[in-house]
Length: 521
Image 1 (cartoon, rainbow, N blue to C red):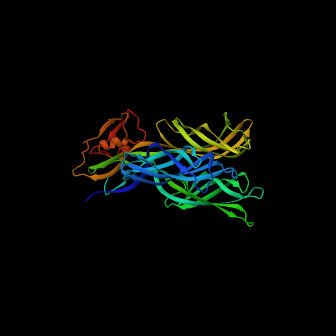
Image 2: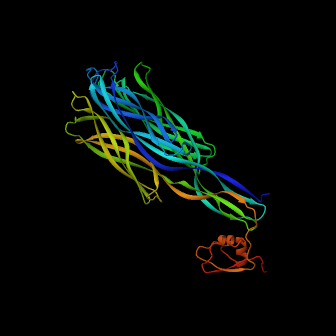
Image 3: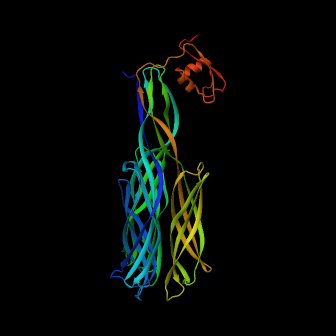
């Protein structure tokens, strides 16, 4: 009959293995629908990417996505100053993980890095887009370790406290947002919506007992062509969306990590009480991916032995992924866009938009340095009435530094960025651009840890103690635990026999009495 019982506990964690980046190049020609006028000049083209599916097949992860193009153009029709057309294009991409499916978790997001359009003929345009994909590859590990040993007779156990970031929860949910914009009587009623865009900002997540409080703002920008006018009107709404999501097992002292993404949107024009088209109703669906980590201290068994009978410890080593910290830096980026020769002189700014692209990141002592560009697009009313409208684009570089105590070269980081707000104004012979960017960096590192996975009682007798006491001179690496295990006694016996006041501090060169089989009182 075994004289020992073991108590085990399960530990689950995610370790960031590596990041990868790839691009999906989209290039195709599109016909202008029969209901639209011919194209005279392309004013601008924007695109919104969305990943629609993700599947791990063997050692590869395959994603499918959709890119929605919105092209504004100047038509040949004299009765219309600007028109727009929307196209959808599917794309696929894959990443070789180099690992088996059951070991890997892969996250991916995408941003438009480049978009351009040109006229093939009056009924056909060619659009070329480059979508940048950022892949995060995690290894999900779960194992059991021995947390405690219960014995009918003497087993000596050495415990130590370890700091662990345990993955406690991993789930997805959705939030629904709604907006209603009313066009005032000082503006023309809506003839046609030329462009609509949505951007999430001021994202937040707070932890409660068994709950996560989710919230973010969705900024809605609408460009519409006034009915029976040549005016382009810009409208804006900023809607706060929130939700309380039940996540059993989490507590207020845990660490949330939430990513938000606009998954779908629907916009409809409605008439007001006077029968005029002055109401824009929008509904949008936001996906939220929730991860919750515990930052906890757990007691693990570092070593064990028995002076009464022989036992064997099975030990397994793991590379444990740990989170050093997460920090967010918000900053305002300003620059002046100079018009080039051939650019049309602006009279009035209509709308400003842009994409934020991270080009480099570097971890050094106690900081992360992020470099990137804001790809800004400014639409304006031209000073030349015959031209009507025009657009100018520019790449605005920036550098952001995030302080992170304990960060060191060689650690890994995940950087999430967003352009929270943008605005433009005419300044002398330039266009002054101002954008608010938000960058969040999470730093990861690995630490090798050894866990006892099993304890087995062996047949036979334990080693015999010396017949008499031993006088031992303490060396550099000696501890009471090591000496007690070596001479088959207990730490308590060493403390009592040598009248040691501080067991954690024994001096090199100190003489200790090691008890033998015969103990003299």
